Image (tube, rainbow over all chains, first blue to last red):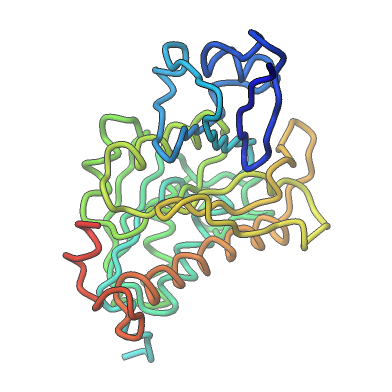
Length: 71
Length: 211
């Protein structure tokens, strides 16, 4: 059975057993540099230092705000 | 006495970084009578900054905090300025911006932007942060948008255009982002913090800080 994560409001399906285990794994899969992301899971901010230990569960709603340089 | 917006009379705004964004945000808020600006930057004004930052030839070599304070005193001497010539860190940010109602993220580097936004959201309860991502170059004015990410986080920018070596940075495009940012701050101050017309709370700061 496929599993889902909601990422920035968009449902994303992962094949059975392929759900990224942690937030770090998800960001790697998406090709996003961790150092530039502010992340929220189900409305709760996750500090960058905790990305690697933050486990993802199917159905979670994840908001990723990615910063690019310039200012 | 300049004509001011009464809601701004109590507003205390933190400005982190005084480059193209911060130097312009500071001026926009002083013009409409912000009570106090807490400004932080470790750098000095350089000649190359003048294409887009709100400084003058005779300020080259001066710390940006002092140059910005000087400019503001010529626009609105009633706006109090608290200067911090420091590099901001997760440790000093909550102390430096203690007492601010809103903090403006006006840094240049992506990692620094991340650090500030995360620090304010996790360590400064109740404070709203207005940050910027994607403003480099010129043209495409309408790609720059203001979005509310959450109750405490407002994000300005096109979300993707990165400043890289060789990018031609302009006052016109960084100015659009800076004024989006200042405008979002004014809106939050009037509608959510010190306004009396909003039904959701009564304009008292204590209530806002608790929520």
